[in-house]
Image 1: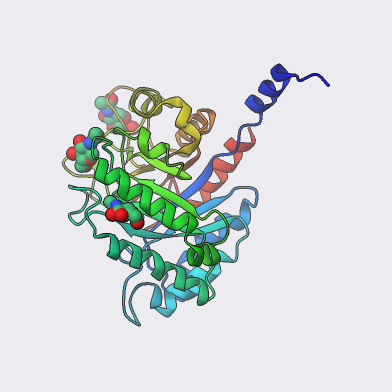
Image 2: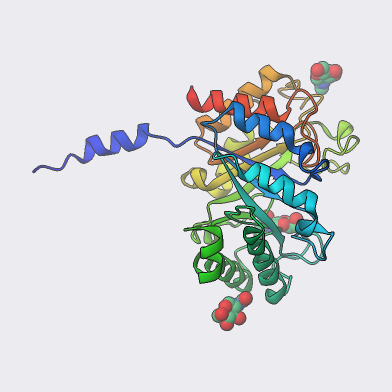
Length: 316
Ligand SMILES: *[C@@H]1O[C@H](CO)[C@@H](O)[C@H](O)[C@H]1NC(C)=O
Ligand SMILES: *[C@@H]1O[C@H](CO)[C@@H](O)[C@H](O)[C@H]1NC(C)=O
Ligand SMILES: *[C@@H]1O[C@H](CO)[C@@H](O)[C@H](O)[C@H]1NC(C)=O
């Protein structure tokens, strides 16, 4: 039988996988998870959209009977979200002792303990599928950090107890929070690396409404040269287009405008253009939000609208 490599290549090129939602959920699940109802509604309304949802009580799972994941409200909220077939829950851990100024500085024993604490949530009835590693290193010149991240990835993916709890091939996401020398980290084959995480709005409107945009204004104003421009001009030149499917793009502070060049205004129509540009470029996962990671109902980029827009872009 004759091989037909040309045909296979064509098929592979046209079967692009959909862009997932990667939702950093740093909001408290008040009212026994009722606060997360808009997220549940967005998942229900878009059954073909898959979402990875990062649960972050306290820069990690938290401690004690009424803190973090041991809080009954967290448990109730976690169960509600995990019940959605199109959602996978990831536990947040961080790896910097100084808010990201230095990386891979949390002692190995501490980060391992946090990961194992997340696995205990499975026993409490909350299906967890993996781990989101925040403040991940962005600089491959540091071999210690490479070893640390490789160790973490191997632990999460192959430790017998963790695999039993999280399920086969547990999910691993690295968040260096920006571009950098990331190729060695891509070679560890995490599900995603968040290699572009930034704000849409201009600095003079940043920070005021808990949008997590730095008031100092030192950030890549998302798509300030037009839809897709931050990916084309900042992300791809750094991490390479070949890594698109393993890359996540997170955009918060979607309000006001992104002047002075393209000066797009934060409207639902513009959101459609920006999300469409992310999907067209084969980015693996994305998230847009009007504010930061603690509030998801502010217009125009409510969680419901963002889920609808991403789902539509995937189908287009
Ligand atoms: C990685 O794991 C190996 C083997 O368990 C250990 O010897 C080494 O110290 C770890 N390195 C880091 C940076 O955590
Ligand atoms: C990595 O992040 C740090 C802290 O945010 C930053 O100062 C540094 O420039 C980044 N390194 C690279 C290679 O981008
Ligand atoms: C950008 O557009 C907004 C209206 O959406 C306007 O108020 C602002 O002056 C414009 N800025 C620039 C630099 O053009």
